[in-house]
Figure 1 (cartoon, helix red, strand yellow):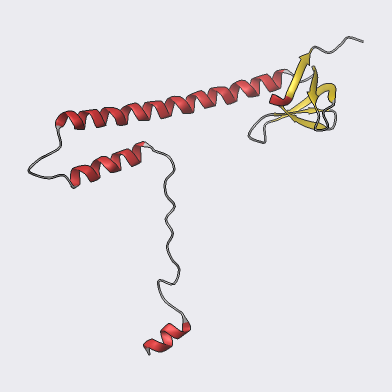
Figure 2 (cartoon, one colour; figure 1 turned 180 degrees about the vertical axis):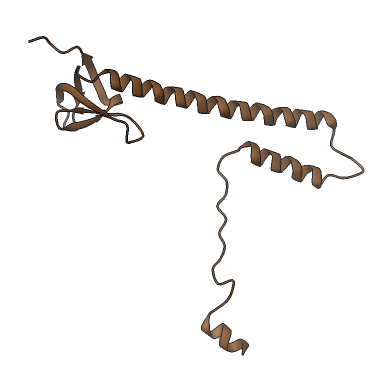
Length: 139
């Protein structure tokens, strides 16, 4: 009976479980390391309280830096959106893929991608690729 099961290749554990390693350090990982350290410490030589306080302070500091980085990125994204929206109706220039300078009026802005894109004529141009922005000439 065992031969039939192994020959058929069926098993409850046929698929190998893969674990994706964490690429960033966050508070959860730091806390997990601290708990593991406490769990495995030598009872005859417990963790120094100064070391514990230092590690806890490091955790709090890391969490605050992570929050600050997130807020800074959010602020930058908002500034890009405001800047992109403010150039609708203005004359802009950018360098095309063939190296020529193309000018036109910014007619719309899209926030669908990671970065705002400005529509100039028929082309969608990333905000960061614009080389000049000027008020439209009165005609």
